[in-house]
Length: 91
Length: 515
Image (cartoon, rainbow over all chains, first blue to last red; front, side, top):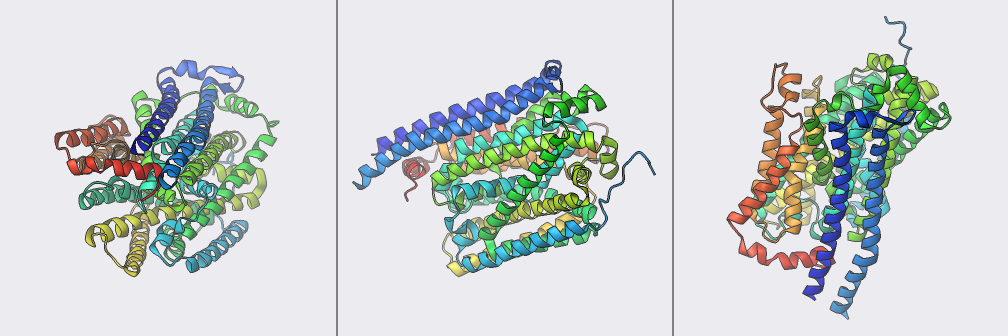
């Protein structure tokens, strides 16, 4: 019983750390580019839209996608694992 | 008189603004009356009886988070410096995935009303609760000062009443919500405000883009044509690269340490609803920041920089001015009333979280050792609310005329350095100890306050000095690692066998939610 909980906690921890690292890399990739590669960031992809605006918008979309991935994972795998544990305890 | 500046009716009593404002006040006081009848226990007062759904809480979180600083401030920053505003909006958004992955569900399963419940879970109650209350009150006070001073200035500018009258009226209306309606009223005020703010921003966005064939690129091109391509590139906000990185760290990890945001996760029935609520909040807040970016450029092109700066040098009136250009005084009045509603909702959430720290952490858990009758808990909670409401009004008046824009950044730095490391370590690390938690919170909080006091923001911009002892405007790049290092080192130097042994039980509750 305790081992099941430990395993589920570990799985959640791995997903949480992995996704946090992804968001961190995405956002600080943007910030480092803004801070140290100003010329490249200022280049216009299409007239009116600089590379910086594109990457900034991608950071926002990336935050949406990672939260979506987490919710899908948690709804499918975490909740199923939790249900199994609860059934063992009460059943 | 500068004849190139177009006339604005901003600052004159605006009939539509007053009408919308009165409708909002009447509706929210109606909600408060309804909520007051349902608020009979401490659990209802601080956690809305855990009856808020995931989606409702997502809207309320968005309403709690989208402050006037982010609506008027970011639109203003974009209208004056273009691209730089995006650094703030992305930073404020990426805090939310962090809250979801690391904090929301464990917090809901382990605590009752405050984040101190989680940090102190298997540790010694008194020292940890006192330290966490200090961290909470530091963040709440800084944030309240920024909101109250902003409220005074805004309302004075938009409705033409005196600064003091504006601050006192915000304080009194907010107190009515929180004192009588507790978390139930606060939640619904935040939901109504989130819908109004998102609706208002969407309407402005639609009307702006309608003039540029619904293509943001056309709008941005027009801005670059008028003010140079610099508006599409990093500018003076990131003159020092390390400043940008330090600010980014504070924004990304500060959200997960804001007491009024964390408190909202106790209003939902279970961890799954806590998860859903962050999903909704992230979506809504992201859309909102994309819209403010468009609004900022819209104001730059359609209102013009000189006209914006003529009203307010910081650019804070960019969005209301844009509303006036697009829809006349009617739309200006609507947006002004929305801005007022925004401030009320944020101040209410802050006051409630400060009151929870005073009554639940300090009075009930520390002074009464967790053993206080229910009537006493509720009475102390209401008393603490009144105290904080008065403190908010007094601080608003004391700081009149001060430049307090940096205080939001400071609140995020303290939250990220004082509260966040202790919260994460207590959730995930078996070896975390009472000494580690207390020193981590105190060191992170005090170090942030000291480094800000000797930063260029205070020593050069505010005091008018020539140089500053600490080179960065935001201390997070130093103080977040410091908060983690202190917590880890102190815990390793003096292990706490009892706390370590209790980790299995904590982990079980964190995962299953069962007591």
